[in-house]
Length: 88
Image 1 (cartoon, one colour):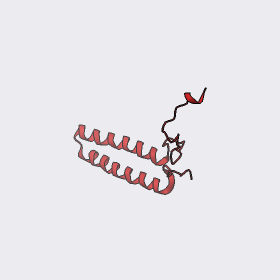
Image 2 (cartoon, helix red, strand yellow; image 1 turned 120 degrees about the horizontal axis):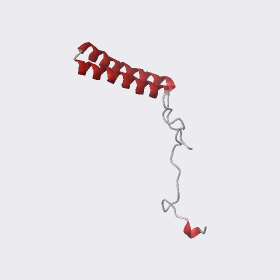
Image 3 (spheres, helix red, strand yellow; image 1 turned 135 degrees about the vertical axis):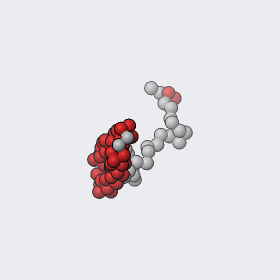
Image 4 (tube, one colour; image 1 turned 60 degrees about the vertical axis):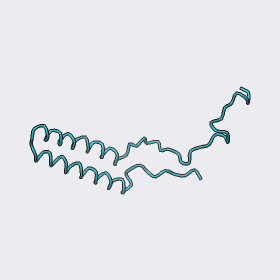
């Protein structure tokens, strides 16, 4: 392959991104807690709305709030996606 056949992305040359991505693809304790918590509590809200059972609907809504707070607490405790590292 000759040098003429090589094509650059930009005139200045190819550049690396400022941070390397993580290899966990977002599979963290805080992420799973948020996902499954919202799936279960939204099912409770939906069942309560369909069956016209207000206590079940309210319990589901309270569960949504508790899930959001719990996931934020897990992330703050270090069980979420870490911050991007610089390549410096």
